[in-house]
Amino acid sequence: MTIDWQHFTPWTSLAGGALLGLATALFVLLNGRIAGISGIIGGLLHPRRGDVDWRVAFVAGLLLAPLAYGLFATFPVASINADTPLLVGAGLLVGFGTRLGAGCTSGHGVCGISRLAPRSIVATLTFMASGFLTVYLTRHVFA
Image 1 (cartoon, rainbow, N blue to C red):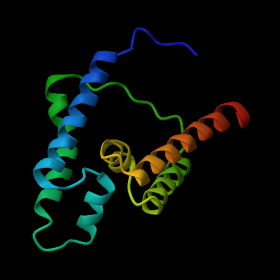
Image 2 (image 1 turned 90 degrees about the vertical axis):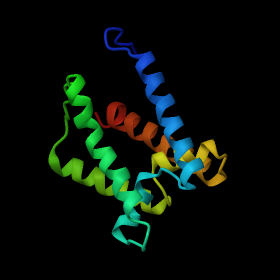
Image 3 (image 1 turned 120 degrees about the vertical axis):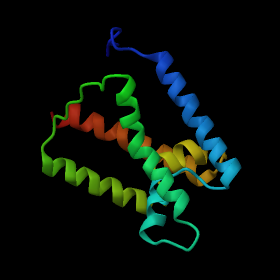
Image 4 (image 1 turned 90 degrees about the horizontal axis):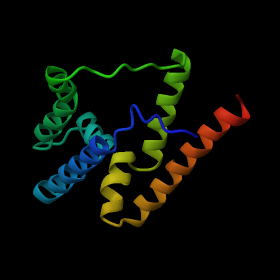
């Protein structure tokens, strides 16, 4: 494995991680809520009275943040080397896993581990191991 030193960005990655940690900590301290995306969006699909406004604001922030970024910087070039059926299947599997695991990577990995929640630690270890195995199989076994 080699590192692409031209595009290696440890400082921006560190700053992004610190901001994410700060935002999730403030969110739980000020609102008593976990910043897990699947739970926030799931709450919009089955709304309860007085529980919609903050969810809509959170999702709006997620959608508008890239637009704000685009005002100050150019977007990186992205390329996806997979066909549409594979992407749809992967999305469905992620959705199924999120439902099965009672949360997503942000809910378990960022918020749950920081609270030392045992189920979040197990969930994070499980989806990380699954990701490692998937990459290994697709790049070295089935390639």
